Length: 248
Image (cartoon, rainbow, N blue to C red):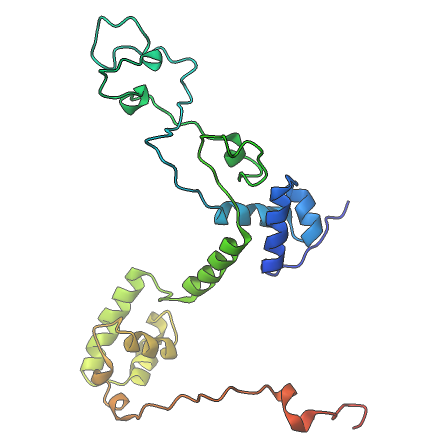
């Protein structure tokens, strides 16, 4: 059986709204996948990556312990004469009202919905009375996180710290000696893991010890004025309207 092919484009806001709607209606990832024409693994990754966990009041509603049912621990309060198990002891004079405040074996309980599909509480009918940690998927929040990731992944310097240190030790002394960037790149191009244009960008950002003032010709150049007029694409210009291949 041939596997259904889907497009390789990013999820859109409309598709994320359909994902949220499907989760609210307890639909499976496969069902949502068929509706928005995306692979179910893509939907799963987006839900797990962009789900958010509301803050809980740990003092008023502490998470129960997973091991409470079979727990046999005693004497956490150093009262060797106490006949009760610590999990069932509610003495008013106790410093800690709950045994898991001091218990070394305390393991907070996690909802099964958060460790397997659907990984969120969107369609759960018990969410209002459930005291466990919740997780939700919001299309709006997921889209905003997607835009932030697009910017952050393209921001900064695409080099490791070791490469930056190597480039700095190679380029900065030569620039301060009066050599041009073209001469440095011609002589040491096989040692430099980026283009010459990228080196100029790094110097502008102050990544290296050398600065623009260390390049003799660079300080003579005048700053170019940025054009504020929006460029018009070739297809949208007036002289191309009506000029089709058929008329030619």
